[in-house]
Amino acid sequence: MLIKTPKGGTALKIYFHSNTIRVVGKVWEIRAKLKEWSNLSMTVQDLLSRKGH
Image (cartoon, rainbow, N blue to C red):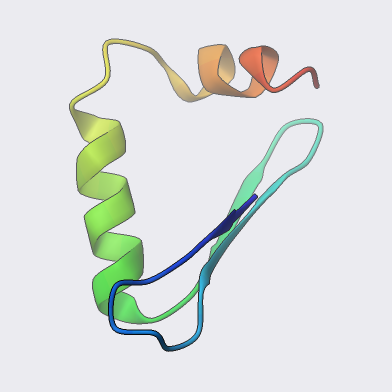
């Protein structure tokens, strides 16, 4: 998954593996994504299973 940034810089990249999620980007991008995910009512395992892994 590739997410475009509003500042036009390097995009946040999210890699879903069988039992892990790797988030690559600038610190502020990663923090924003983690904060967004913290508002979800699902676990990491639920998120991974929704991505088909």
